[in-house]
Image 1 (cartoon, rainbow, N blue to C red):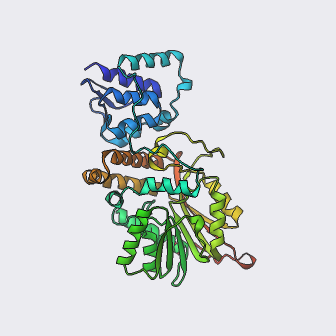
Image 2 (cartoon, rainbow, N blue to C red):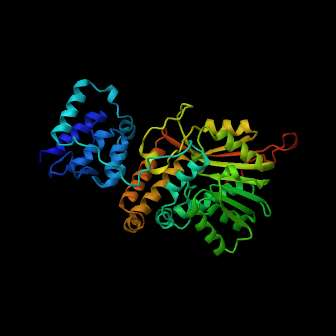
Image 3 (spheres, rainbow, N blue to C red):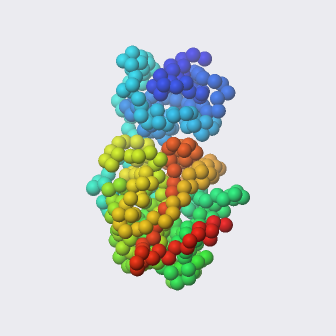
Amino acid sequence: MTGAATKVLTLFEELVGIELPIQVRCWDGSQAGPPDAAAQVFFRNRRALRRVLYSPNELGLARAYVCGDLDVDGDIFALLDVPDLISRIGDHRLAGMSARTIARSVVTFVGLGAVGLPPSPPEIEMRSKRGKRHSKSRDSATVSHHYDVGNRFYELFLGPSMVYSCGYWPDGTVSLEDAQREKLDLICRKLDLKPGMRLLDVGCGWGSMALHAAQNYGVDVVGVSLSREQVEYAKARVADAGLTEHIEVRVQDYRDVDDGPYDAISSIGMSEHVGLANLPVYAAHLHGLLKPEGRFLNHAIASVKSLPDKVVDAPGFIDRYIFPDGEILPLSKTVDALERSGFETRDSDALREHYALTLRAWVANLRENWDAAVAEVGDARVRTWLLYLAASALGFEEAHRLTIHQVLAVKPGERGSSGMPRSRRNWYR
């Protein structure tokens, strides 16, 4: 059939500058593109196009999808995996388009009836942020936006482990639960945890690291998080395990922890919330909480490209829906901050492929539990998370976009002693 679909497909191919191997369907019943395409994009109404018109980048398309103005049928990975599609949409390279192409696009929008007042953003979008970026109050609000949406929702895609970070998938690992258990144990071995030690778990989530370390290594743990729902959940798990004498979980900013010294510190999937400007504060404060020869493990997503030192508050899908104020920094920035604070960097372990496997497992869980997830948090939020998790999986599968590192550092003791073994053989098995 001819109609809106052909015009819409042509319009988007001109905007992104590549041929799109997708099928487009529109509100008038028309369709265009390969009938056997792995992914089908359904523009349910003209409002979807207006969203793109007013935000001609990934934010406009994301708003249309989150609100249900646009649907994706079939394989969402096939759609997002079109080479350079995400970066092209994100850049919305209008500056490189000819005046004729821009004029033709405007005529198409007008002809399709897509011109009108800008639609309101979805209710779940975080737009207003009060206070200075990465101040304690603002960090508390942004963390709450991300995590305090109902623990049951996270259970549905994280699984019983309730670990919201990259798993570790050595050869032979087949399940998400095994991968998360392997990751927690790997961290414990790198920290050389022993009975009687004190461990600080910064950004402790739902308590999985604290529980694993106390149950399997006999350590006493303090876990801190800014999410009240996470802390309540973690406390219940600790009580059920009979470990209240060995694990304390607090609603607390890492900057307010003052009950050192600790023998070891873990920070798993938390420093992405710290920000470039606060990295020196983060590193110095944790350094001050450690005993001499104490080890610190920082497990965090990293950019594979250098970033400008100045952070730009640009509106985008991730910032508005997933990680407000989150900053993905190059590994070099983290290591530099650690070393300037007095740490000695001893090891960095890249787990990029492991995160891709983890994210695909989360996507599978979310799809399997779709109806239950919608019942918990609503269709819009579940759509948001599917889009985020699927795009992130592809981001970690491509070597030029995202990576993740476990950086192990030590606070040198007297005359520079590290207490580190000469071999890593006890870390891996």
